[in-house]
Image (cartoon, rainbow, N blue to C red; front, side, top):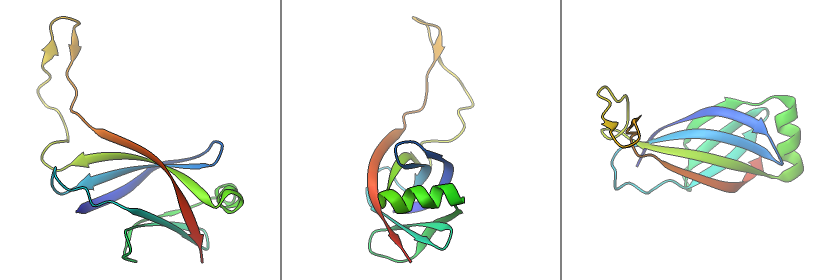
Length: 117
């Protein structure tokens, strides 16, 4: 189940691109089906068929024009799980190349339709 969703960045590329960070409650949770809608100048991201908003973000006029033109938004999702991700306090270097180990994260990129109200 999704715990929290936050919007990190919104860019205009070929279409409107939204970078979000999704925190899941358990490593085996796979229940994230993003639904996007724009009400006036606010982007609302919800999960599945529920109409409960997970996050909201105010858009600029340029972002709204691009979203209306394309009627879809590119989502770049970074999944993280409570208890697995967070701040790495002890860095264990890899002796062979001298670099520190990183915590594994799952990234996902998708193009979603957007509804206007």
